[in-house]
Image (tube, rainbow, N blue to C red):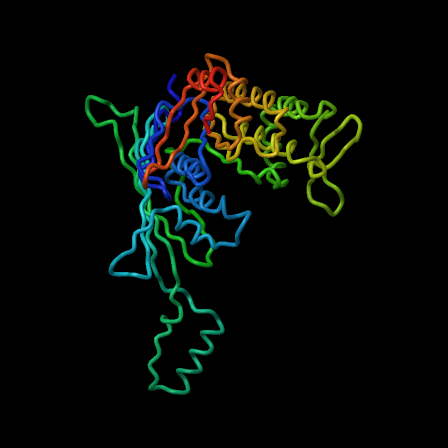
Length: 385
């Protein structure tokens, strides 16, 4: 069965060059040593799914910085791109991201050029008064106000090639091209005024810490309730605590909305009072419902989930990825998570593991389908991470 993304080659993205993941499955595990590029693969897939959406690029750039640093968004965006110093402008950088692939998703190539630029900003009111006084006191003074109003910016030039099945194959080539340019200015809020394109695949990322953002959980739960998916979410949470009855969004006087768990023994308890395992599984389930049919990206799949709960949790996740036509990509450092995913799948389930390895200056992917993975783990007990 052809997946949303069947094959993908990350030609240039962060430190990755010419990395190919072929014959992708519905469930795809990424393993490898630290700094082997697992998270970068998820980021590359995220931008590939929404190649002309500037907000997706900004969110991807911020995702790994938001927890640990106060790095400006400009710096975070810059380091998505392999850097090349312009010989004529040593203070400025430019870089290129290039990804190609195929599958049910019609995108075939995505290429984005990053350039640092400068522009002239509007002077502040205080600066205008100062300039007026300066000019009035000395008519002979020559003062270029634009010098102090130079602002830094980023230009992203995006180009995509995609397969258009609506084109008459006898009259025109089925591959079409689109391009967009977006400008981002330092200390200015970016507002996208361009219409959205239909070259996009629903995608979202679960990081090791997004489950702690309660207001995001509330919005996702609201969406799941409209989809009548909440009963299935409750079933998942009951795998960790069978005393859980329901989820409620309640408003207290002078307090913003709060997500409560209705518990047989404890009564109504704020979600924040429960452990990370409950909150993590809840976020994964709600995000899955949000992006159907599409691509779900999970960084560090096993985070906060006890090893005894991995089997049942993964069985639920695989079942609903199938039911909702969601393709899953997940990184893991845990051999227990690999074994639990293997045990949670059946022979007909399309599970693939990719081990990322550094070969000199290039990353290579070793592909293990489910049958081979099962032989290596169950029959030989081999390390596959």
